[in-house]
Length: 313
Image (tube, rainbow, N blue to C red; front, side, top):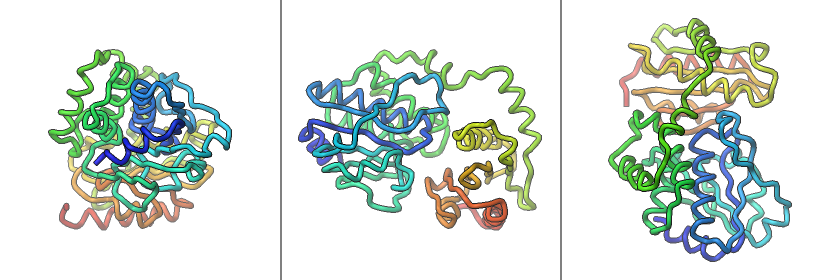
């Protein structure tokens, strides 16, 4: 599965690693983890990471590289955790001599020369772990920690049904390194008391359709005054609804300068076709999209309401 990718990595002296914009734990974890993995095994190569700041994970102090356009000449670009080309953090990957992609979303388009797409993985980080294990690459505590972080966050702490025996086998492989789990989990999940209070208030914003689809709608004027607010707020709010008894589909809508950011989730239904219908994508039970206005958002909500009348897939 990974032989062609390894062949290209060995061939190129300059490698530039991309992922999707507004990175979550899996995107940034796989990016930093892979960069360190390559540095540990191919010390003679130039390894760069590009993209926007990981505002969802403020404890990560690893800086992205600012590189000139000419660095892509004769270079290899690797794209991680991205099912759609329009979501890739830096379009310059197209100007690289060769490209590789590791992705675990439902396949919607070919992006790279070596396009490794497998939706059976719980995370792109899991794919990087499998790549390291299959190719017998040397792990370090730094690479193992970031890759493990991506697996943890995208599997919901190994709770989502994308978690398999392979997930735990790869987690065990990473834990052969001395990962500081206490510090990692504290950084990921500890919250300021003010945020806990705010989330308690947000619980009161949850509404339900006639068929028990839970949703929250947040207007633009209720967001903090920064451009990254919508994705950060949306990913936080959607998680508030995942354990409500009798709710099998839930969705968060957050207005932004670009439209309405939508996060769709389910524990029984395939909601991906609805996300795709509105220009998005993702996984069967966790997808997202951005729609132009509240009217379109409510049409999407109605589609989810209709879906909930059917038998789960």
